[in-house]
Amino acid sequence: MKRFTSTGHAQRFLSAFSSISPHFRPGRHRLTATEWRTEMADRFALWQEVTATDAAA
Image (cartoon, rainbow, N blue to C red; front, side):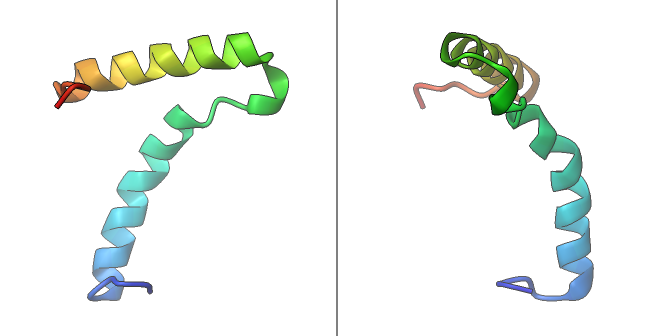
């Protein structure tokens, strides 16, 4: 339970993280370097759009 105040806190974090985490892990072994870079750029652009964040900030 590294740095979690309780098991409930850890569970809440992990349940949210488990749905977000695969978005940033596209299966690198199946893609060429160029394909992987393009895929990750697309995924981060979508993430910024959904979360309304600015990469320059």
